[in-house]
Length: 227
Image 1 (cartoon, one colour):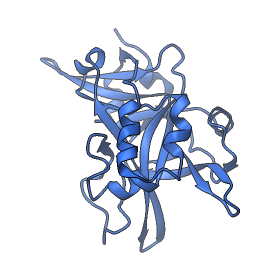
Image 2 (image 1 turned 180 degrees about the vertical axis):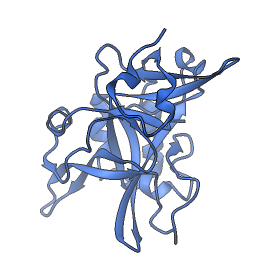
Image 3 (image 1 turned 135 degrees about the horizontal axis):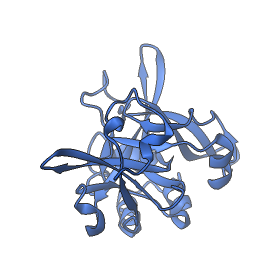
């Protein structure tokens, strides 16, 4: 389960790191407490006229709305299990045709303990460098127009993280970004094979304060370690 994450790098930083060709919309304001229904930044690829492959930076709503539903599902489809993403009716078209990368500095998870739930922030290490969550996207036409939305793919957590929570986002290493985004890859079995080749993430968790539990709180100290 991934229900909160942080991304506070600038549009320029994200575009440079991910080799973006076209910025459709800049990244949202820096956020240390991204929650479902919030607008998030996403990197995706498409074929332009003439067959040229273009990598774009867009904004999407976190909480997938399949294109065929009459109204948004409740609860929100914020996560998609990597083990079943190509088979579930809500996810399979997006998984085969509209895969995206979601830049993130890290994510929050809560560990159940005798004293209650302890929040952790998990990142790739010192400085919380950007990583890329595997995402799937879709577009839905509602009363106010088209809505682009996304879900984060998750997997079983490795032993080093499993004591905090049994699931973790699928984090795509840089050498597989192009394959994950490739719009020519539409075969579901090949998508499953690609997911199987993505290694388990190596992350460093740290205890953080309980203030992150409220979506109204959004400031840098939310990700600072507490004793």
